[in-house]
Image 1 (cartoon, rainbow, N blue to C red):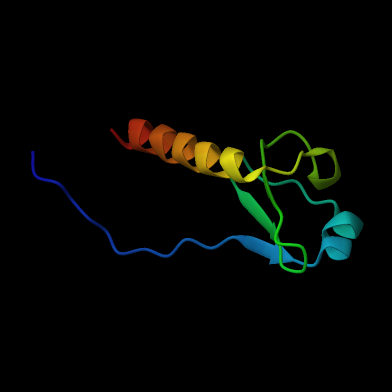
Image 2 (spheres, rainbow, N blue to C red):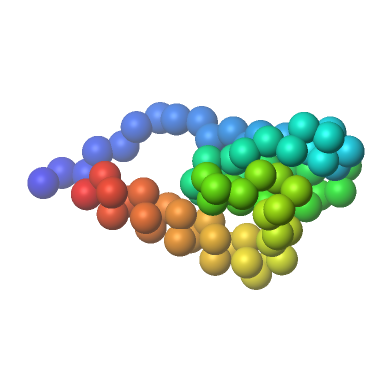
Length: 77
């Protein structure tokens, strides 16, 4: 089977730290949220709202992104 490539864009939800805390939104599983004023990142799990999610350390970001894309690749088949 030939490889198929699709052109796409991937956007992070982004905002200032105070706005994230105030809105306390729920990110979907694997959905990233970026604080533009601090440079910190959280990834949603679909269960916990922003204020209850941990920040990712630099090595966790790499591992988390790799895991997410591996999961997506597995799901797509």
